[in-house]
Amino acid sequence: MSARTASTRTIPLSRLVPWLLAVPVLLLLGYLVLMDNGAVSQAGGYLHELMHDGRHLLGVPCH
Image (cartoon, rainbow, N blue to C red; front, side):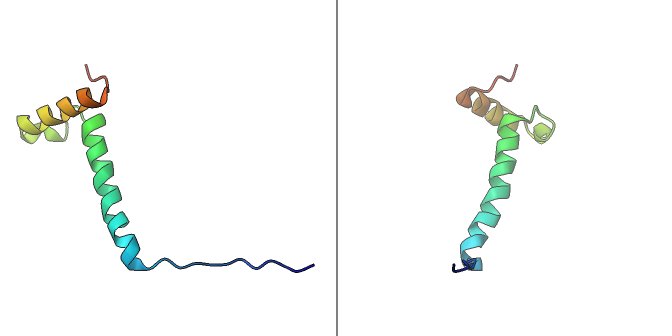
């Protein structure tokens, strides 16, 4: 019997950087659209209305 050795692959950092930047931005946008009820976007009414319309566009109940 031959023992199998685990093959390790390394991913270059240049391929990870876009994902490391995009994931937090997407999570923040998802929070703002889906969860925020005005707590973060109190600074301007326009931002709140934009997120509110985004909820309706995605079919998320908000009121």
